[in-house]
Image (cartoon, rainbow, N blue to C red):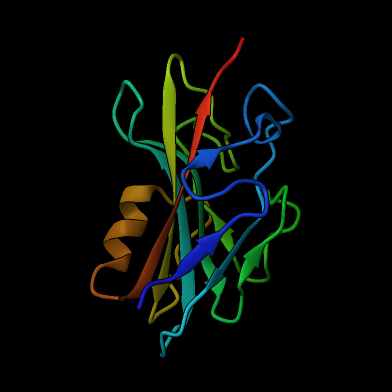
Length: 154
């Protein structure tokens, strides 16, 4: 099985355009996904950077995405383009928003992970990655991964 997640902005393992980073206007990229899994009640999206000097750095979290949703529009933030019922978690910039790639050096990989769940998490807005992962345990029916890369040129 597996959720197929794609972006119109970059290919899997391709370079993320600067528009979606701290060097650009820092808006979230458009994403779309497909799955054939049954029993889905919601989706969770987590974007993090496993190459960060301090360890896995969280850039973006969305949860309780409706079961019928299959895309996230560009510039999805706490007050705009968020699918009905979806909530945003707190990232490692300590903000409830998207925080684009901004590696201190070298090329980093950014993992856009999508999880199909057999439940709605019903957590408060601003939940942390740890809280969300704990609530997801035993409820993931399908998942997928899209990897983007970014290297600062400035």
